[in-house]
Image 1: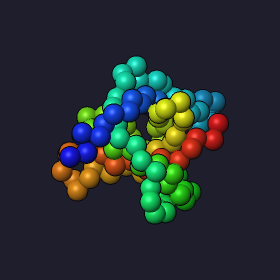
Image 2: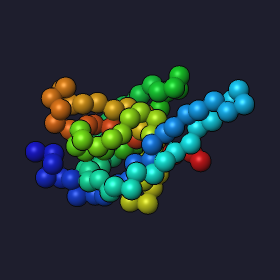
Image 3: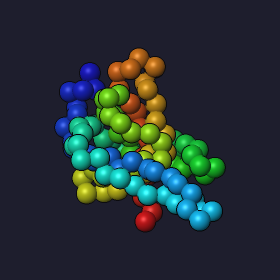
Image 4: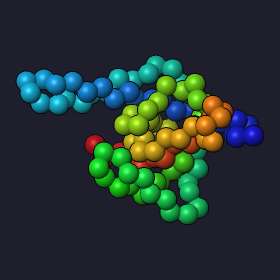
Length: 106
């Protein structure tokens, strides 16, 4: 089972959007809870479309479906920042998320 491989800590930064003076302002709020995951480099190239852009998935992260993460959030794992560009509730079984990550451009 994938849970036995949850040996890496990560932090979620939740994306918040608001209109300020007619402009869309995006901010991120750190979730102070540390979550556990399994993270792997894909063996084959896979792509995801998010926000009208196509991304090549750089890392696959697996975690509990209880983790409060949605597309557009970013995570910090092993000191690296990644944007979440795909998120699947694997086989819709509410067992674990499979999340596609790309290196965050800041």
